[in-house]
Image (cartoon, rainbow, N blue to C red):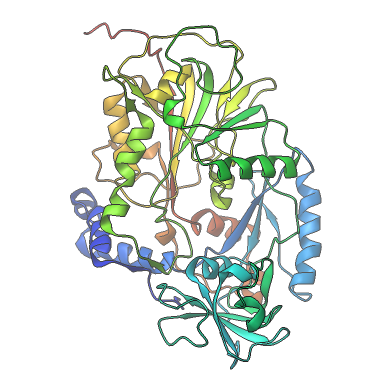
Length: 497
């Protein structure tokens, strides 16, 4: 049962999404009323957190059972003795699932209040404490040690440093202030660290602050590119923290990473020779409309629609002769994606991989075979024949998912869709002109696939492990995966032309 209102969108953005979810193919199959109900259900689910927190264990450093034991001990401390199960996924053996308890309805609101930004509020609903930079407003009498009711300014209307706020806000639970209002808004120095430690959150979800060093699993050599220096530095810091020597990050524009001259490839970093990689993960920048929880999105229609052409540009950036090049990753770290995006087989020792910081899905062999630049997918030019390309987003729009697949298949004949294992998500959504067989080869994770949950301690005690895993497979963020095989070399000419 929903406790928050449906996600707040600009009217033109909601209409755009509705048109996609109620396209002619969908309406003809489901009926107009059923298609509309499904869309409205989706909007309600987006404002609520998923029913599980997922962790992918870094088996490069430790065992799944060891991390499971550590988590069970940690949650006993966090939840004051409350027993919360930690489940190992049967199909993804390095994945642990932790159920979220809530929404809890008997939390007493306090006189002393703090208002946090929407992004901070979303993090609190996933188990985070409130960090000082996220606090927008606080009661004038707030002192360190006070019990505070925390609210989220979902529409971004509260002024920084306000003493009270009467606009649209959503109650997130109670916590204990680690700082006084005077300290937070003094302006003398930029404070960091926890500002409010959540003790009674509406959704009881585990906090991972200083609990585990990480949950990534990587093998081979990962090459991560991003043209933003701060992001590259963050990738390097995470790799160092996790003890992963296989990651090499470069500050480089991915749209220029294909090497077109055939001189000997002696450098370690980009640009790279054609047909030198075995696997590529195109974890594309997207509108992020599948992220949960998200109670309000202030983006304009122009902003939401800007991602489809950007993704195609990253697939294939034109050159002076109409040739194409592109990129494959934004170096994104995302909890659910890092768990569920394992549609490409594990790497073999010695293989070299290219990808985002979250998954090593790009592999490169030491020797690269050259090919002349043609009107082909840039990522496909980097792939060796027989190589795999995985395209993924964390959005729900038809335009950024199934329409991109249809476009890629029609534009780049060297690519073929491939089935994915394990099969956890639903098939693709109709409306992009793909065949039923092609839709079955896609994985779309739709937050509206199951009713909103209201689990309490009794419900967890009565539920079987199988029931909880089935729910975890469905009640996640909204995202999408397509897997392509490069079945022929991009240097080969089509015999029909």
